[in-house]
Length: 379
Image (tube, rainbow, N blue to C red; front, side):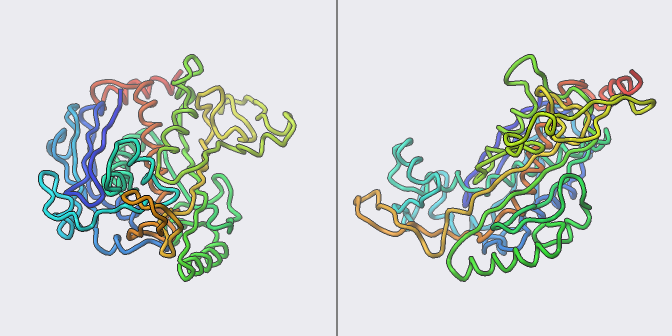
């Protein structure tokens, strides 16, 4: 079974991760991982931290000569900004706590985290709750995507809405190469220009903006996931994983919430059969998942991201040290991080699909997995 664990604080020495369950013999392209990390750091509306960090992965174990060994794969991403924070974020001894934070930000983990863990410094919460943690999940997702691509499974993404500005492209009707040329990962240039204006306006007003991104996974075999157990349903596992990304407030598949307002005849995808195509559907309102299982159609999932809670024009809060009214703490942050969230969302979705793929075809070596997969194609 594929599983992973991440560690690290935003301004600590490094981010770390460990992946267990990868087969032996899988070639890993490290530079592809670094390109995916760079994508996460790109996008119009990002903050000053992106000018400091140039994320690159360092593999520590589980590989030899560019190939996985079947043992746990561990890695790290150095936090270059730690050089400016080592006195405050030293894991062993804090030399200077002059940057103690006592004004929690509305909409962040700050206040609830300090209450839960009985901290007196919000920094103990915000460092781990930070979306910088998602860099580790991009590494894991990039590795999983490299495995999936050996079996013709492709994971694409694009931003479909920023600050209320929506693209005209829907579902798989867009070009991933064109998306990657956009500073907002939008496939609609007119919408992109309007969204940039919205971001610029938000920055000038001390505001932040959210949006919606879409992930489309093609080439998935029929039967990933299961209807037998509630926690094996593919859409449930994807929703859980995607909802765990910082600032994500909603997840939908296919036509999603729109289905609640439509009659059944307009929602359910009729089934057809032909040679040699086999069973197929002329529509994909279900978003590629029925009964908790992939049905062979593209998996289409959208995520709604709320505006970043750190505002340069901060909201009202309460100082946890003195219980007096204050304005919230301001950390260096983004105006809009929806494009970055799209990259993370694709990585997270790839990880879930890879886990279920290995559950269906898994073995100790990549060669044996390929043999099992090829046999399934002839059935």
